[in-house]
Image (cartoon, rainbow, N blue to C red):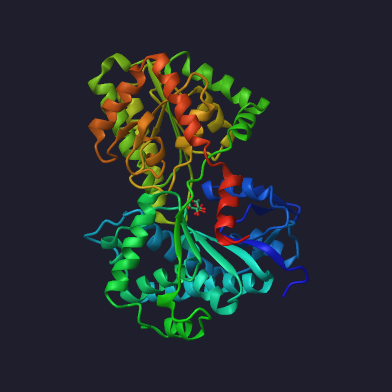
Length: 485
Ligand code: G6P
């Protein structure tokens, strides 16, 4: 056990920071990206004693581990790069992400072959590395909060190593329907479900996903797979201090992450954001704006969003020259070809729209492909309409952020596939993410919404968006782990 054991531990693939190797050989730090990191970082800022265990993601991160460089409250695991690549790109992002977001092009994929099996072994090894590090660092009876689909096997493995710990698992993505989860090989599906059921509490952003998980777990139970089938499972059953796994109690709970309104508004009013805003205002030149901000991510449905914008300009020509679509689509998972192709397709479609409708003094779509949060915040402030149309998404925090920051109040076009749909649907214009024409009509309605109605709706959207900011969200999960405290 480490010299100072921790009472509260978080495990996530991505850490709060990453390193970059500078030309002079020194290491500099950058903030980690993505919704999970922003939520957890904000929450852990108020938990100074907590330890965040994450993977070294790059050569620079690995170099930092080797040099013994670390930040207080963070431990990076130097996992073999090949094993890491299999686990992160091969399984987490290409199999589990595709399964939970229903992204497969089913006539061709998935095909679970020998290569998949090899990668699955790496995923198990990577999960084991986390479980071992947590077991080493945790104080007696500590609370361990495991994050996301990268680490689905950790709760089960950790419970074997340290039966004294209180363990939760939180999924930041949707959970697959049982038809989709059933595509996985039987033993893999069981390992995933039972890995997660090693936790005392399993959490999701919304009941839509929690219900799917419960449905999948019940179905497996009905099939009788609660009886130990694989070697790993039977080991677990024998060693479980709480009796056979099938009699363990795992609570499934919902903790819908929200935003901290004060923090976000303060961030959005820094001088550097003011500068970017001035630049954007000049480009937009008094026209209305439709704003979207996403990773270039297949599940975000950026292409259908652009198709809907094109149909808006075709079907409602009065908007030509009167609106600008500000689309930030910053690069993500570019090691995967399907993501590189998607990124290119987004840029290409935006160019086509600009070529088709643009005039000398009007560019219909302004795409930014840089990871530039300052620009995104400036766009939030300028937003008349926010477009959030994922095919399926765990929460989609951006749907909560824009109403909090927009200056004139924004009309939110929100798809039924967003996790935020449950909380925001009453004051949003909701759309089926596959229905391009309905999305075009919703954009038209949003742009035409009277200012007073927009302001009223935005007030209610912002109230819903800030109902459970990161710190109380995290504390609620800790409290759920220690019900008698
Ligand atoms: C989603 C996942 C997070 C992930 C983030 C960014 O929000 O739930 O776990 O960190 O996307 O993806 P990346 O692969 O860049 O970490």
